[in-house]
Image (tube, rainbow, N blue to C red; front, top):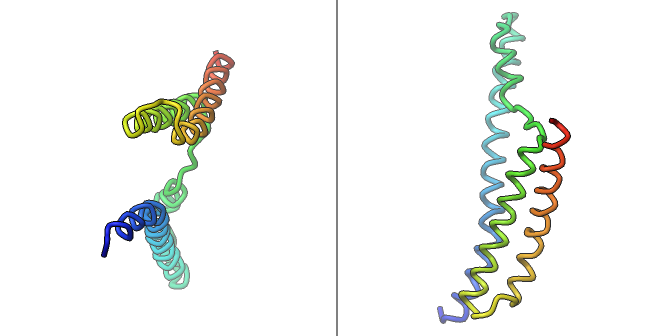
Amino acid sequence: MNNHSMALLIPIFGVLMPVFIVGIVSYFRAKDREETQKTVRMAIEKGQTLPPEFLESLQKAAPLKEKTPERDIRSGLILIAVAGGLCVMDYVNSGFIFGGLTGIAAIPGFIGVALLIMGIIGVNRKR
């Protein structure tokens, strides 16, 4: 393989790896849920009573994360840090700060700023 085709594989793998990771995680979560449902179904068919602790553990197995202002602030800071990292990478690679990658960095940066503002407003309303 020549250098050109190897260089082409890098962005392809960069795009496909998150898809594969999400797919693998989703597959194993579905497999786990299927096994749990199979166990419950077999216990009910045999006439066994399910202990309340087991039913409570099923409900707690997938807790929904509550949206709080603190989570908004944390998410906003993470997105701003990602945007800053992209700007630094653009500066290191091309020697100037307002290159093509800086425009892409503006997307998570502005979303992060919006989340940060929403989180600060939410924290102030709580008090």
